Structure formats: C-alpha cells, structure tokens
Image (tube, rainbow, N blue to C red; front, side, top):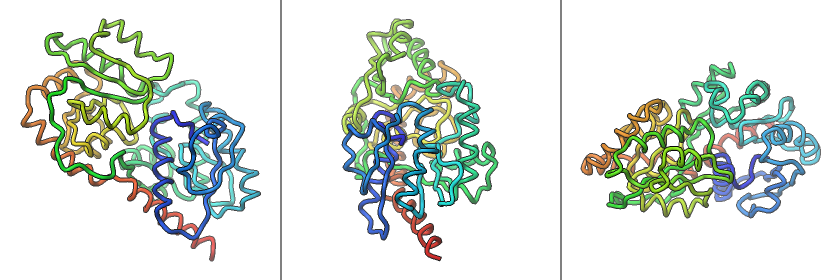
Length: 358
C-alpha cells in the first residue's frame, strides 16, 4: 500500500527487495495490495499478481488504515500463509503470521522531528499494536533495532536486522576523486533531514571557497527555496525535484562529495550509494552512520552548522586523506546489496512456509 513512486526510501526498499527476490527459485506465489497511485506506475518489477486499492499511499492516514482494514478481504480471498508489511505499518489482529518491516524509530525517539507531530500518538499506537501482532519484525540497522526494542517493548529475538543495498550492485573498482566543484545531498524535506542546518553551514563558508551544492528530492512547493533565499545562497545551491535512481547516480559520479546531514535515520541509502560509487562522504555523527560507514567518512555534529562547515573545508583541503577514506568506503560498500537482502527475506519466508505445513 505504501508504494507511490515518490516516497524515497520505502519505495526503493519494496521495489529492489521484490525485484531481486524474483531472481531466486521459490515454492509460493506472491500477491500485493497496492495504492491507487501504483495503478498508474510501472509495476512490472513485482513478481506476482496485484490488487489495487482505492486508497492513497500518499496519505499517511489512508495508508495506515489500508494496511489494517483493506487487507481483510484480500486475506479471505487469497488465504495467504504469510503477510509482509514493508513500510512501518501492518495489520493489528490476524491469525496469519506477519512480517512487519519498520525502517526507523523516528516517531519514538525524535517525535519533535516527525513530519506531523499531531500524528505521533496515533502512529505510536498503530506501530505498537502491529508489532505485538507480528511474527517477526525486520529493521534496517542495529542502531534502529536497539531503539525499537526499547520503544516497542518487544524481545530482541523478534527483531531481525536485514541491511539494505545500494543502487549499484556491480561495484566500481576505482575511487571517484575529481575536481568537480559541486557537492550533492538528497532526500525528502522532513525536519529530521536537517536541511536548514546544512544551509546555515554553507552560509558560514567564505564565498571565495564555497562550493556549489545540489539537493535532490524536492516536491512542489519545495520549502528549501525560501530558506535558500533567506541566506542569499541562490548562486550556490540548487534544489531539484525527485529524480530516478539512475539519474541520481550520474550526479553522484560527478560530485566532489556526498553530504548527509540528518539528525536521525534508520539506515542511509545515500551513504551506501556513495561508498559503492567511490564518492567521498561527509555525514552526521549518529549511531547508524557509524555502523554503516565506519571509518570511510568525514563526520560532523549535526547540531552545529560550524561543524558541518569545518567538515566541508577539511574534505576540500585534504585530497590524500579523502582518497583513503573513499577507498575504505569502496571496500565497505561490498557489505550492502539487494541480493543479500532478498536472500535473507526468502529464508524468513521459507521458515514461515515450513511452519504452515506442520
């Protein structure tokens, strides 16, 4: 239900997981319940049949309700042995085992940074009930698992960590250190992405050394436009709409560095993509980034625009150090790919299938 083609991380997860799952042999059939937006999208990547809902995946309320109630007639008709809810919400009461993927604990650990604070109590209630109903919970990192165990009050054995992949499963063999002038960042415009902190950092940089920054992922009306104007950075920062993964990778390969300024994440697809592309990284010093990138990045305090600015200056002034960290990133990136992710999911599905046959 969550797939709309413009959600970013959750869309990337569903599309890559199930398209890669189709490359394996399995003894079951797949059926999806999709949003009304998906009816107008290319869904050929899904290796099974699809029921299209009349509800919107772009509306968090409709999306959550569909995960709870629209599944009921589908369950009665299809009689599945297992349900997978891939995007943070799931059915609250079912006899059928449920695998629930919760990508992060944002609404629990940083409610002040959630997209809509009025929805926090409702999201927490639905996630807690869905997690109790779930047979297994999947999350994207050990950092996220730690937060979810405390927030949802479930046993550690119930939550499995399955890392996501990058957009480039065929890894490069060279480091992408170049003299291109621009930096790149991207993602939705939610508060936890810390865009204003990043723009404040660029405002602190001397105009003589200030690089160009491209920020992808905007949807009209893009709130960053006014913030860019506020700091008079129109000549340095370009905010662009959401672009397909293959176009984003072209931008990555020409970038001097990738910046990820987030206050909190459950994973970080841009970090993995940058490492696999051999592009230098400047990222916030948060637990999940340390888990994923280890020593392959420059880190900064996301609460401090000056710390961000200092990291930008450091990466520009230390080409040898930057090369070594990008080299570490290229090696580290080998640990993350969609084939591993899909294989782990298949093992879990087959376990449920065996339980169903007993």
